[in-house]
Length: 273
Image (cartoon, rainbow, N blue to C red; front, side, top):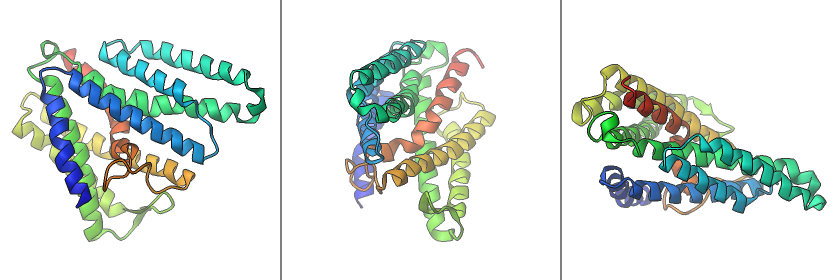
């Protein structure tokens, strides 16, 4: 029930930001999600005996968000370069923690890339102008994207409960089954064409099928990857922010692996692909 109530509250907010004439509502919502998820990831790092530099990482994540917002993704190289230099330089001033220098800098950088860069790709999609492709291109792409991600999770859950017999990755996520994963992927492949039929006539059927399959596959791998990090830290959820869903990182784990795919696909569409 808590999962349903959270979705009932959150879904209208998400759709509003996706379809609003101003893209900055979506930018703000995504930025909040990124910073919350990054903080949760850094908390997991602490449980795994790492000491990430949370302030530097958060500032770098904000810079990455701004790079995508103003369509300057090339600046991400500068952001990550600066973060690498500053992270190492700050550790030089604290030689008493020399044994932790490598894992500290690595955890700091990984958090910005894994959460900040990957999730910010969706901001890059939202900033796509209609003139570059077709009316409401960004809104349609994001609506299809979230529909596929959410229905993949739903299909995997219910089909896994009904038919699941073989464990998919028992050490990483004991509740997931091979049957559930196949059901989630099949659901995703169906949702892509369904989006084309209902609100997205501009997309080719082959593209809708391919995006459904790719998002359905990558999303489930992303879910398992985040579970791996949680198991390593010895926790069940990344946080308790969202009732019934765990933390923000738990909610966006499937999104992270798929977001770059949607970003580059949106750029291909704007180029007339």
